[in-house]
Image 1: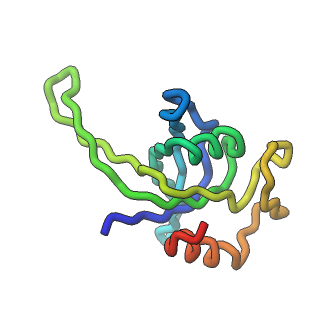
Image 2 (image 1 turned 90 degrees about the vertical axis):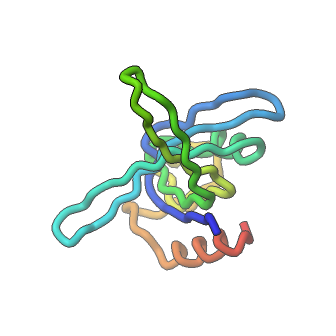
Image 3 (image 1 turned 60 degrees about the vertical axis):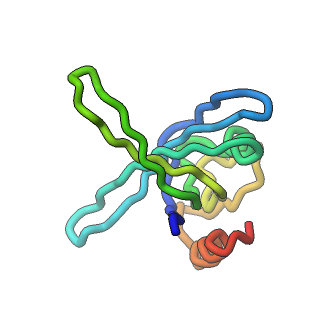
Length: 133
């Protein structure tokens, strides 16, 4: 099974690609991880299509704390020096906002004061894993 669920902040506003029925959106999620000494971020490039892309482009922006469910795919290319380079990206099935950084978005939001996380995080993750969202 190839199923990934991550939560983190959108690093910049999503970028649109394609059009019409083939519309897509690209965005990057920064996921913080505490290793016992310091906080380190991992960055995940994400792609989503169609209605999901429209939702992301309309409702989410840099700084929003999102939970993303999808699968990891590996791509490769040959760089200018002739070396094979492997890249990974998340093909998103579902995305939901946990915290909206900017309350001025057009989207309905889960505005939570002081960027504190709530017990809803686990409930949302469980619903996404069970494809209930």
